[in-house]
Image (cartoon, rainbow, N blue to C red; front, side, top):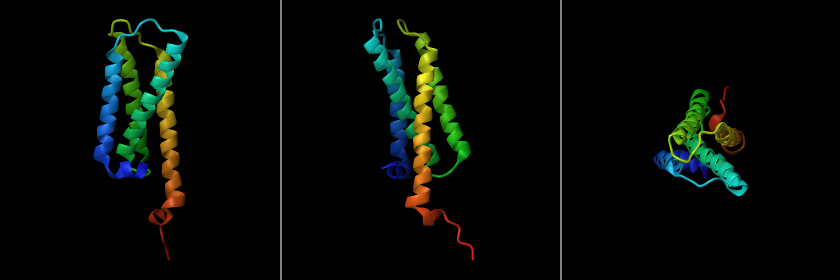
Length: 137
């Protein structure tokens, strides 16, 4: 399934932009005081929203190849977007800029990058080994 998104990068681009817009929109909303249940939901939201954003950004930019610089830039862009999201909330009435949310965002981003990297390595080693082997005689 990941390979399909890598081949159809316009769809991956659309999903990445859509996730970024949804994150921005939800960050613009005002919520009432948080309870413990709402705090748990907030942690799950931040983790999975930025997990999804980073995952599709990696699919879009890396495209299944071992491009370490591009991979690192995609992670950096995702983390900067997470920081800018919290900074944006500083200006929304009833919202707060929270360092713990930045940490949860970054955790989701790093988890997505680990899963994607393992996926790329696994496919290169087990699924498509002939495409990556150098045959020297």
